[in-house]
Image (cartoon, rainbow over all chains, first blue to last red; front, side, top):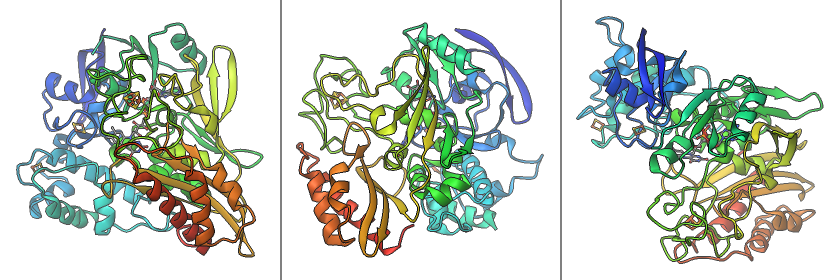
Length: 167
Length: 330
Ligand SMILES: Cc1cc2nc3c(=O)[nH]c(=O)nc-3n(C[C@H](O)[C@H](O)[C@H](O)COP(=O)(O)OP(=O)(O)OC[C@H]3O[C@@H](n4cnc5c(N)ncnc54)[C@H](O)[C@@H]3O)c2cc1C
Ligand code: SF4
Ligand code: FES
Ligand code: FES
């Protein structure tokens, strides 16, 4: 079935007609030419398709585009403020948080969403005291970023970048 | 993937009527399991009724004590809920040990309960599987069984239920609220999922068209502590090999109240009632915890690759209860 929807992507309304079977990831990449989110596994296992939906990080490969009418979708391409990179993007550059770059847009969106979760005081599996304050220490960063795989193994740089951005 | 219609439900009655009227229809929560199965060719609904905009997205304290969790509350929001963190830590811990941050933001309470097994043969439409295609046989029985059941399995299916959250809910005596064409009913969480028996295609006792609207938790056991521990192949972002949810109250060195549920070992969250019975009134010692775990696991039947689950479950039950009795882990 085809439906007419409007997706709000990186601050712009993008009307399009989609087959209901189109995932949010495919709508962004194949239909709207927004290629920042990447298709790694297409099954929720690698995180390279991570975008922000209403500010919250989400895997775009396991959700249909039709389910996101009225949502605000932000990809890594929409994070910068004009020529000024988002602090998380800058930190990835400063700390070599990537090698080939394939996983990077997903890592960056995930890190932006995750830093917001930290700010809200959300605990993680690495948090010993569920009701206490949470710190952005390396164990917390690794646990909270475990949904983003990097085949180049740039993890040391990724953790360093996020540690810096969390300050 | 087969084509399908998509509808966004705005009230419970219409959502239930739409799915009940069409044998090929399904509810859509966060989609993290259903969309995956549709891609794999394991599910092929002709109508999806999106329930995520229903007004079921709140966690509310019940007037008589206890908590009501709406079916569309996202796993991440539930794990972070202040009341859950303070009074039902086992539930926060279980949720936080499951999937990843970006999946938990999508996954809903209802969808988490009804996610289907990760048995690799079930997920591969080219291999026989009684759960996917009744009567075709079980490829796992003589296949790779590291991830399969040791308790309550049958000749026809040895799959395990993958949810961590459901294991914590089983230990908390949660009750599922479901609305169908004939009205509302309350199902104890431990009765929601079925053992496979000779009908492994039926994961739960829900009827087609029944919508989970909420999960209710009774008041926390006064003076008890609770915890969840998950054993897996890597430190994060992996399904459980074995997991243990427990609630324990000790007074004067003796067990006064104990609830234990196991994950990764059966077709449903496994409430360890035999171990619980063996522990009531017993000294709260590691020896007693291990003895009780042994009683529960006496019924275990292992397959080629999963014998390790029996000692792993015994040791994990013992360790979780010992830490709770010591006042560790919360
Ligand atoms: C890579 C990966 C790793 C994962 N790791 C873990 C893990 O470690 N531990 C764990 O527990 N889980 C894990 N999961 C599973 C995840 O928790 C589930 O996919 C999720 O909880 C399902 O929720 P959902 O809202 O997305 O469900 P959906 O996919 O939307 O739905 C699942 C099923 O429930 C039905 N349904 C949905 N809502 C309702 C309702 N209100 N009433 C009746 N029926 C309904 C749907 O029809 C469907 O059959 C993982 C998933 C992935 C992809
Ligand atoms: S264990 Fe169950 S789900 Fe897995 S192949 Fe056998 S019948 Fe299918
Ligand atoms: S492409 Fe979505 S998680 Fe891998
Ligand atoms: S930088 Fe190459 S996959 Fe991560």
